[in-house]
Image (tube, rainbow over the protein chains, first blue to last red):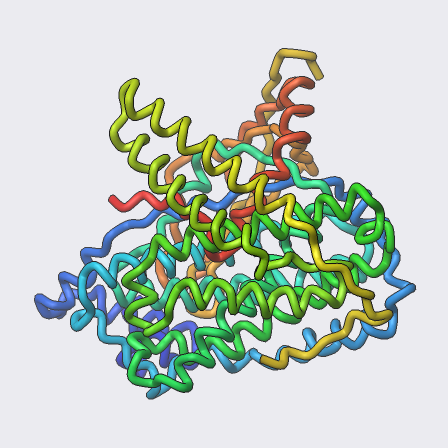
Amino acid sequence: MNKHVDTPEHSAYANTAEEAIAAQDALDGPEMTSEMATEVAMQNTLLTPRFYTTDFDEMDAIDVTPVRKDWDALIAQMKSDPNKGHFKKNDDWDANWEGMDPALKAEFIDFLISSCTAEFSGCVLYKEMKRRGSNSDITTLFQLMARDEARHAGFINDALREAGIRVNLGFLTQQKKYTYFRPKFIYYATYLSEKIGYARYITIFRHLEQHPDKRFHPIFQWFREWCNDEFSHGEAFALLMKTDPKLTESRVNKMWIKFFLTAVYSTMWVRDHQRPLFHDALGVDVTWYGQEVFRKTSEISKQVFPFTLDIDHPRWRQNLDKMERASIQVAKGKEKGGIVGTASRIAGMAKAATAFISILTIPAIHHDVPESSVMEPAY
Amino acid sequence: MGLLTRSKETAPCTVTISHRFEELSAHVKFNNGAVVNPGDSVLVHGAEIMAPYGEVVEEERTATITRASWVEQQWTRWTGDFEFMELCEFSFSEEVLS
């Protein structure tokens, strides 16, 4: 690849694949400076996505006739690919990794890696469904969603590369076990993860609009259009759930929905509290942020779930905090090891479980679900 | 399928990796139509595959599929659902920095 096209200074500015490669070659080439050499000596980070399988026949049997009109409109919108040109870097991309506090950098990189892994896992799952299915409504949807997730993963990957982190796909040649997801759990879990993803990104984006001085990395400027993709994916799962009322109305399934909501909300809470510097740098109070994201997600999820969690209940915050403390105890116990460490870890897990049950048993707030689930991203 | 025993089979497969700005993805496809079931494990043989940045790489490889025993398959069916957190951006990444 000794091609010498007019090499753009960064692969991201390239118009074609050839130019991107040339730009990368220029970085990797022999005429590099010492700073560039340091950059090339990248840290490896192994992506560890999970591999899923499901009941493909059941998914294939989905009939979208009851929601045909909304379904076709959504697929047409996704096919038109409004974000095709969005994930390109422009002059607003002013990443300054050198100037970043190392501790903040570590948390931010952790944030980017978990985002990249999530997009990647989503892509693998959607692509697998596309491949195994034969119902063209369903396979088209999964193909389109896999496209978006791979695009997002590529964008984050590029941001990581600038920070000197190279994604390692070594997992491909390692033994990997396929776990199982019931189709309905795929709907609940992916619906929630897409909608909460939207709420998280848009909350940060709107906050930074008010406080532009806190925007310590350019990637946040891309969040609005990015999370609109997440929003439409969520719309698709809402429609899928609408095709079969039992999915959201039967007693057992309502219990599952409550379980999923509680698990997703509480995991997010615990996880975000582990990144204090990241939130400080953004000027975001992590507790406010958590509640705000829950509020938005709950409001959106009314489109399809018949109830929302009572996030203002006195037991709510109290037990989320308890879970957070328990998770620290578990991590410390694990680090310590030995009998004392193990005992402390088990005690921590018991505390977390008790707190989880306490949250799970808070009575939900019921409401009437609208006939059509269609929604626009409005935050 | 054995109640408690696993069995192994090999399958030719195509591994596709896109390591480009516009797409980061990786997929393994079995060329003989083999289907992976809950609890099965897949090992793609050969050296680690990594596309250089900006490229898409496709390689023909051989994979060993270790079929789960019946008990293992049932277990995975019951417990697999709880690993769904992986799909959330705030999941616990188990990244290994080397």
